[in-house]
Amino acid sequence: MPELDEMTKGAFQEAGNIGMGHLATSLSKMVDREVKIDIPKVDIYPLQRIIDEASEGTQKSVVGVHLKINGDVTGGTLILLPKYSALSFVDLLRKKPIGTTHAIQEEEIKKLREMGMRLCAAYMRVVNEFLGINLQIGEPEICVDMEGVGKFIKDTVGSMADEFIVVKGIGYVPSTNSRNEFNMLFEPGASDVIVAAIMKKMMG
Image (cartoon, rainbow, N blue to C red; front, side, top):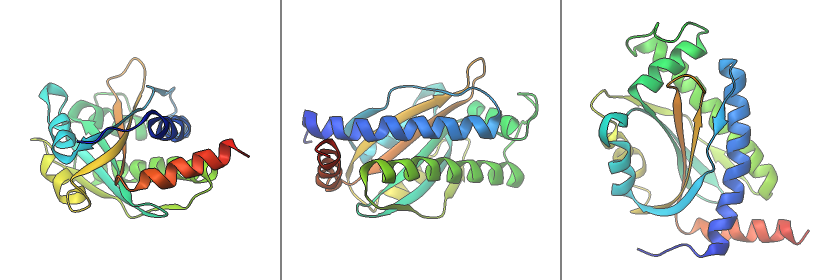
């Protein structure tokens, strides 16, 4: 598996940092709470590693929200939520005490889908402005599976590529178990476009 050179990794890291900052602001407005973010990680992941990490241990993801990316590059966004995070976010979105929601049904799915769409839109808007490129997102697909969403990931992004440049960030609400993993998945060919946009911006 090829590795990203430092220039390419830095370009995606820069775009990820600004995108995650605006995502956190958008999520904070939705839940009316402070939202903190980890520094995004950038690497090339084979599809199976994405699936394996989403399906790992007690923190395995049971809710997945996917939106396709089109425009100057192609790829997708993938929001992954462990079970208790999904339930907590539904409570926060409804302005109810955490622990109120015990199951994810149609109304809860609607809330999570709306959250995914708004977060992706906030992320993409600022990345487009920052890089001066055109990235568009499609309609959200959502899966709720208490056994894990590995098959959903394979079905939604597996047809795009065998490996991806992944920009992974975590947004979380302090003093709660609400944890939102946001992944930008770019096909490897996107690196030339992103690096060129970053270099053009740096050179004024």
